[in-house]
Length: 194
Image (cartoon, rainbow, N blue to C red; front, top):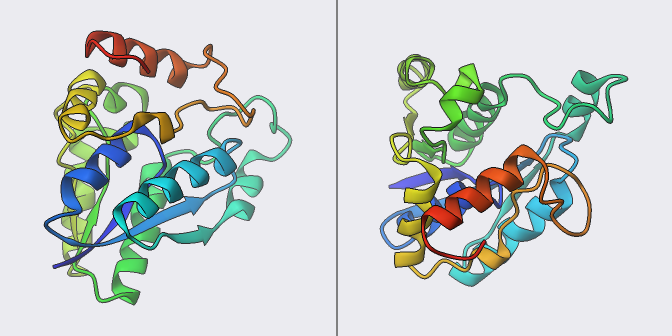
């Protein structure tokens, strides 16, 4: 079965990539939607795909992010509201283009508290909608918290040094943004170093 996996270069999507790579014909997709950390995320996603011998498709959609961001270029970490909706729709269209029947999204339990487009109710409705297009949306990590996902990845020897979580576009993670703090807390809880 051919499947598109949305790959951000972060902990969840990287773990999911390594979980699925042996069993599925994966088509990893990175969407550059104008996020400040796109360059770092893309580099991390490419490194993981290279390690697994998978080609990475890169969708250039930065103008969409710029359109939504408007004049708030410094205040918004994520320029597109409800980005999972947008990303899933783009991935479903890409799946249809590539004769894939599934899309995998690496959301976790904690995402639902931060984004309405990550709640189980929303994902269920999105799954139903995509099924009418003959695309199945899978979110196998949705019931796990970030530390459980880190533990899963460590069991599979995922090299998390080549992942990116920081919301800012600096050369090094800031350590202060919400994603950096969640990452550090998850690795601490998993008994490992971020």
